[in-house]
Length: 173
Length: 173
Image (spheres, rainbow over the protein chains, first blue to last red):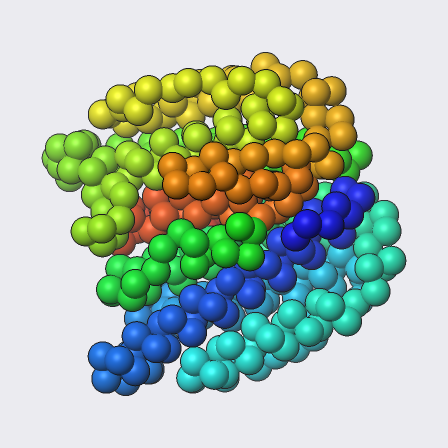
């Protein structure tokens, strides 16, 4: 990240999403190696949770993907690519992130022009939340993305995977 | 967040920092009420960790403050206000966040003009990391801020404080 793009809704969003997903892929590789070294069934790691009523690691990764692809599609007014939540292995979870990154990189940056002031509606199961593109990125996309990235990290760290801040930030350092 | 400021290094950073700290203050209030209701010594909650070699809740809050005030000072080329890490109560931790927010709000937004391409050097104990203002925000400030906010949330959630995503995102929704 030595280039300085002009500050725009694109440059405040897309590099953040991609960087986070690349670092999360690296973290998943370390978790996979940990399971292998300790002869732990990978599904035990993938289904690990920080609390009984919190989502497991698998769902954290899927939520990162959903937040990222939803952001790009909503900001550009294009259709959100559907990805079935069927991942059960580390390979499949890393592939989900790779596919999400590939999708984001395939979207023409010019489609983001003016997205900061465009209406964005987030449809939740029980209600709809109206945003502008800007408030959607600042109030939802970025906090929600890192919520799930960090929760994935916290699950792994809690159960003993050797991770440090440089694994989490590495793309940025 | 219904206003649409022009997208700038200021608008991609300052509202994110302030929003995260306001929501974290709300989360700390819920943790404080939990300790009171369960008759748990507040210091037990403040010193809780997700793993023996991770920092406790207290340090997560201090790191949020350090990340936020460091970002504003480095981007504006002004001095980082020093805050001693002496907090031992929920009131003091919430006050640390309030003081950090007040500091950020006291900085003239005009000082951020052009900060995206300014050199920023992050001095760590063992090395210095050169950034541009833009790469510093995208690669360090935002991921690091949410790392510590979410880890604070995860510590509390892991130990049974009733928190949900709306407590974490509330300013944005």
